Amino acid sequence: MKDLHIHTIYSDGEHSPNEIIEYCINNNIDTISFTDHDNISSYNNIDLKYINDNRIKIVPGIEMTAKVDVGQMHILGYYIDIKNEGLNDIIKELNIRSLYHVIGILNEIKNDYNITFDREDLKSLFNKNSNLGRPDIAKLCIKYGYSKTVKEAFDKYLINAYEKIRNKNTKGLYYEECFKYIKNANGLVGLAHPKTLKLNDNELFNLLKEMKTKGLDFIECYHSTFTKEETEKYIKMAKKLNLLISGGSDYHGEIIKPDIKIGTGKNENLNIKKLTILN
Image (tube, rainbow, N blue to C red; front, side, top):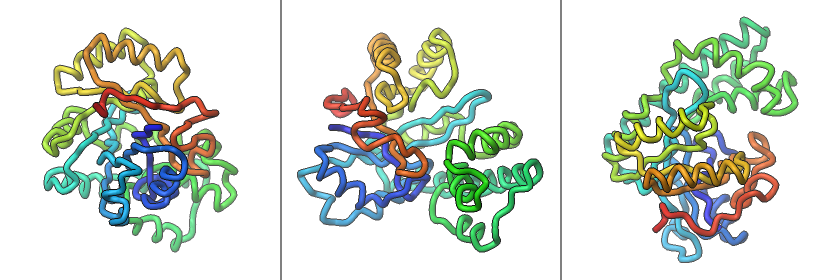
């Protein structure tokens, strides 16, 4: 199986790169990519014994947050040069921005719901060597009993808090900027999970046409949240626009997205054997 959308502890995942690689080797997954949010630290923390292991191929990747007025847009980059100076510089800046983004969310849920956390937990969060986001706050909500699951924390507090600061949010870049940094690092750029944009089919197709003129290389057509019909629709759009096809589970771990498994997705709705982006 192939899985080109996996998160590690260097964004909002729960497992280290080495733990994930070992799991994949033991579970018939031979091609993977770590696509941490605005972060590539996972690639500097892979055990040397896995680098040239012929049992698994690791495609260097990243998932960058792009600014949109409605929904969410994430840009995937594959085959990137992880030592590229420009990419590493913008990642440092984005990680600082993510800190202020989280502080904004914390202020909103304190004001609206009187939700607070101990100084030591916040200190530990802010010192985390990774991109920060709402899942980090959701974990604290569970720890302190404000919610039982990450989804409940999002539904009760974090979605509303995000919408309130959306216009003031400095997190992320415009997609054209994401393209520039990924392309300058010799990578291919694509749109992750198109359905999160919350566009109708015509709006999405027109956006993809526009994005192609800016350098779009592929669409993520396979994803744990897609129905079979949605996957077929995105594949049709990709072929019509002569774009490559990628796919992956969007695995995070047992807390953030407990129903999603590496390689097999949600309720085993994934079993990707071929992707044109790998050709």
